[in-house]
Image (cartoon, rainbow, N blue to C red; front, top):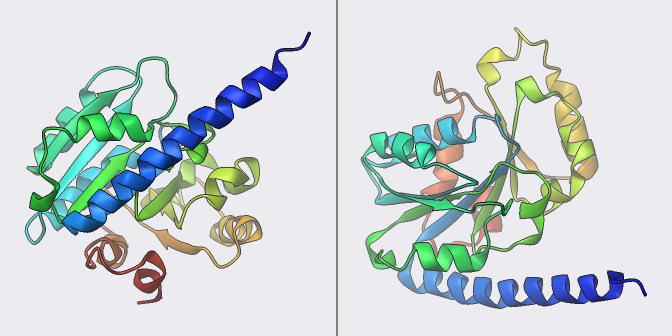
Length: 228
C-alpha cells in the first residue's frame, strides 16, 4: 500500500498548524506596531550582505532587529551584529526553512513594542520557504546578477509567494553580462506587476528607495506601501 496519501495528510496538517500560528504572530506584530520583512533567496545571492547594509542604514532612525535562519553555525548573526542592531540566530539543523514556531520561540526574549522594523532572513533555499507563512508584512525574494536571468522561471512558486523582487549585486551586472531586460521579463512573466528593485549592498545603489518601504508605519498595508 502506498504511503503517499498519509504523507500528504501529514504535510497538510503541518502547514495548517503553521498558518494558524503565523496568523497569531501577525496579530502580535500588528498590536506592537512593528513592521516585519522576510527575505528568501538561494545560497550566495547576497542576502546577508543586503541585510547588513539595510540594518546599518535604518538603525540611526529606527529600532531594527533581525532573526537569521541557517542550517548550521552562527556566522551570519555575528556578521549582522556589526550593524549594532539586535540579532538572533535560528539554527535549523536539517530543516531547510524557517517556520512560524521557530520565529515565535526566537522572539520569546524580545519585546516587540521596542521595535519598529523586524527582518527575518530565511534559510538559503528557493523551494521549501515558499510554503511557510511567518507572519510577515512583506516577503522579499532576492536573486543576484551572478545567478542568471532565468531564476524566476526555474522557481516560480517562491516568486508567486513574495511581494517584491530584489536583484542584488547590481554593481557586477556588466562584468557577468547580466541581461537586465531578460530578468525583468522573466519576473513579470511569472508574477505580473511585481515590483522589482535593483540594488548593491557594496555601493549602496538602490538601497534608499527600497528601504523607504520598510520604514513606513506598520499599520499601512503592503499594497499601500508599494503604491507610494
